[in-house]
Image (tube, rainbow, N blue to C red; front, side, top):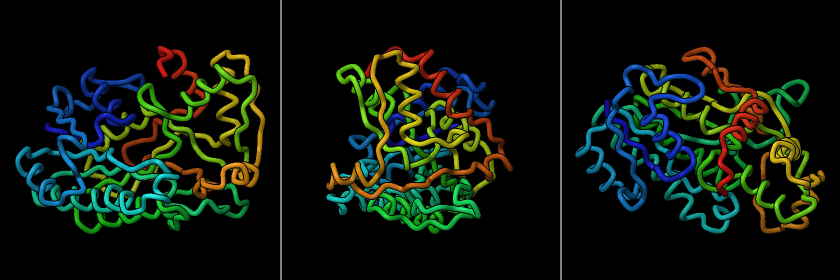
Length: 304
């Protein structure tokens, strides 16, 4: 089997390569069909997915069985000020991959985000995690372009998986966990919002489930996040506790944060996702967010 990974130098792309080369993860072994798979890792210098003709030609030449699209413009604030760039990468890039994959009957696994939702209360109590039936209504340029990318994938590629995740962290690259640890090394206290809630997701868990989907025929939309819900303040507090650093974490509201950072984009206040489609198809082995971050610290070498 041949797997093409776009955005191969990012958090998720790097973790996917690690699991494919080691034939498994802490959550279990690779599916049998992926053992000894041929892996084609590419980034923008090898393949610019915003170039439709180049993308179609590359896919046709290399003939992958599955493409996992980890390439994205993920700087939420940057997407507000560079909307053309966000549109090209987050919307046109997935469209071009979808067109190319459909031409050779390849699977396309496209990574999306909780930012496609508005962040408003959900369910009778306002605190019900959103499953795949929930209606997207993004409030930021990042979320809007990611949603259009989803729609293009659905329209142009028959064998598609759209996998929404959230609050991703890993051993590689920049992420919230490393930012908090870095700040705690130089500050005696840090302030984090306590009224935005979601699901922290370890890239190990996400990659494991993407590779299960890669050999399935259960096409469609999936949510794939750590189980359990917390605020950014809760997450930061657990990170600092596990780091053992002498730093206090103080809560603040989103309004207070926005007043201090007027350039920041709108963030969803409630973006907790429910992995219902995963649970009803290939199985939901995503760990509770506290178990996953605890395991992260057990195996992290501390490299920022």
